[in-house]
Structure formats: structure tokens, C-alpha cells
Amino acid sequence: MTMTQIADQEGIAKPSATGIVGRLIDKGLVDKAIDPSDRRSSVIAINGAGSRLLDKRRKERTAFLTRRIESLDPDERDILERAVDILERMAEER
Image 1 (cartoon, rainbow, N blue to C red):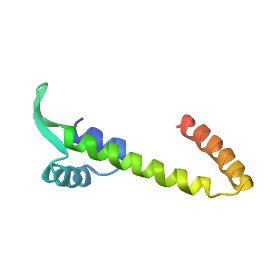
Image 2: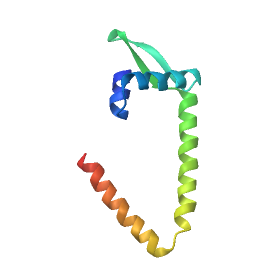
Image 3: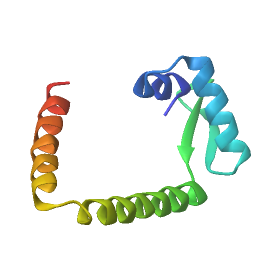
Image 4: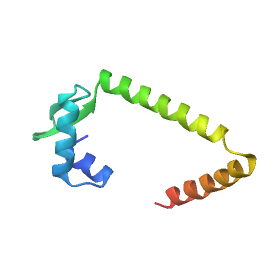
């Protein structure tokens, strides 16, 4: 992805995206290369270390949410399930 694409997708200004991506590069989580179709631009891609960290964090978040949801009473879980349906419908309208 280009820096502009990242900024647009995340809904942030390009300078903010540049700063965030720079920190990710410094941490060795993404790579930056010259865009072969436009040498004035750079292409940003997640690398192996970034993919492993992302996978680890997703698993941690899923485990955390699973524990929290399991602690809800049945009525609360029903409410949450209905809310998820509403949120999914709203996301599709985007």
C-alpha cells in the first residue's frame, strides 16, 4: 500500500500515517520499498515479524473477549448478540 492509501483507509492525515509507518519500520514490523510503477512513491508492506505480532495480538484479543463474554449472564449475551447484528448491518451500509 502507498502512504496515501494507508492514510485514506485509516481516516487520518498523510503526515500522521507517515509518522506511524516510520515507527513501525523502526520496530522492524513493516518494510518500505520504492513503488516500481511510480518511483516517486513508496510501497509499505507488513513483513514476517509484523505478521507474527499481528497474529499474536489478534489471538490475545480473541481470548480476552471470549473470557469476558463467557462471564456475562444469558440475557446480557442475548443483548450483545443483537447489538452485533445491528453493528454488522451498519458496517455493510458503509
